[in-house]
Image 1 (cartoon, rainbow, N blue to C red):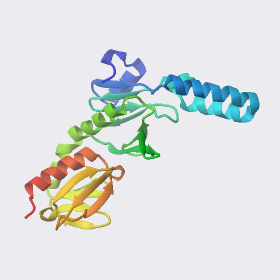
Image 2: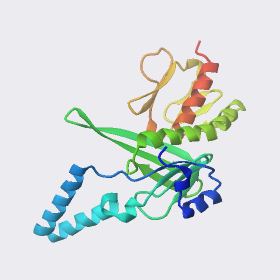
Image 3: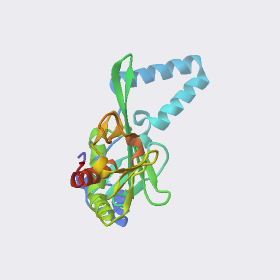
Image 4: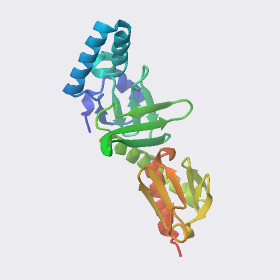
Amino acid sequence: MAAPPNTLPSEAAELAASHQLGSLQGTFTPKRLNRLIFALYIFVTIHLLAMFVVPGLLFLWWLRRTTPDFSRRQAAKRLHLFEHGLMVHPQSGEGAVVIRWDSVRLYQNITQKIINGIPSTTEYVYSAVGPGRNHATITHFYEDPETWGPHMQQAVLRAQGPAALESVLAGGTVDFGDLSLSAAGLTARTKGLLPWSDVREIQVRAGRILVTGPGGSGAWCRSAVSDIANLHVFLAVAEHLHTHHPAT
């Protein structure tokens, strides 16, 4: 992780304590522009101001609202991950959002741009939805999304996985958004129920969850990963149920 516990500001520490978030696991700062892009932004700003004042001012205003390299307010924002939850300053807006792992519904949307057939930048968007109106969108605005993204998913798995499995085994149904799980089988909103005895395989590929049904030819359903809440919890519980209800 990105920071030792003693780097947490006092105000953030008090907020974390009030929500019983436990020990600090890591802190992530806004991602800085590389030198080439930074120089390009400076060049564009100067030339716009010299030739077109209003567009130049608008471009400078946009940089100061969105880019930590041009805004102290943006540069001061942080993503803190704790033992029992997260605290984040969203890229847009003021204030910190606090959500616990045991109550969050976490959605992820990871997409890679393709330019002229060549893979380009990867965009990371995680939506953390808490009780009531408490929610936050966490993106590649923060450095190292390859680290903090999986960490959040695993933290949610530890906090909610056992209870989700226990609920299913007790006869309940656990909703994960586009898909839900029960002891009877896997249910897709657009397809209905597929009994575990008919499930051949569940895999994640190209941003989708592919469920293969009877016959094994083609996917029974193709749900976007971005439509699944708490992806790692879903996969862990589904694997357990599929393993203990093998196809005939």
